[in-house]
Length: 329
Image 1 (tube, rainbow, N blue to C red):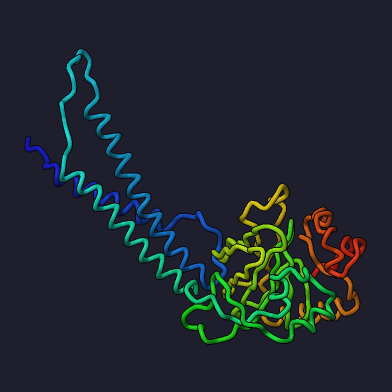
Image 2 (image 1 turned 45 degrees about the vertical axis):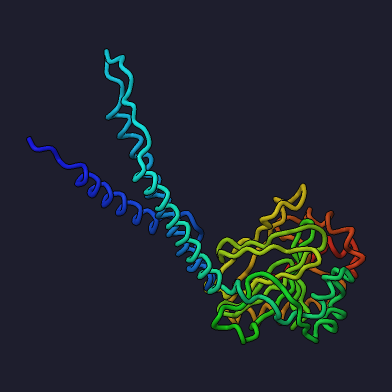
């Protein structure tokens, strides 16, 4: 009986490993539903890395299993193993292949980062109130003061994810100032004077978030958007994106910011354009009637208000009004 050549076995194993890796890499359910224009770019890169990881896992673990079986100790065999030393071609192979993979992934990641807008985040307009927050002059003002302070845009250098190359010279459709404090997110809309504890945006709009932090480093993360950006004390950062699917998605602080870091959560609500206009109108009326009330906490965790108490004087609100938050639904 003719023995099958090792090269043929290797070819068959390579085909099987490639097929399995590609199928698993493209059909896994590890990521939440995509909800932004940037999400497919990140998922495409993740799928490539996951496919390569599956292939390497199968090759390494498969080789270990084959060697365990083929070179196992036979009963009654007490001799020493073969004195096998280094194999130069093999060492070149297992050094060259990872090098090519790493270089390829590096080039691919740079392309994804560029298409998401990571290379051109600086020099976009920021509201005057947001820039003032960077210098520590105020955390938030009453809605009347905020509306006056945010009328004139200011050019401030930033880092983060900016406009995509296609929208580089276009202003954002909606600008929102986002401030992280222990342990809540504050969202201020300069165009309408609304302040909220949730992020409300219209689907399909080019949204620019101007991020800052009052106390320590926070990280604004929306898993469904595949976007995450640090909010830094004294340094403005930016996150620009387009939501593609109406719905409610979690917002998580992804940077350890203190003992109650795990409770620093809120949500982003993506409306249809009609629903967003209705929400904006309703909240403008409501906040004009309650001028000294500011939404500052996660609606599911009102206990967070105790951590905001030291900031109530800066906000221009009282501890009582902080407890009686007007939720923006």
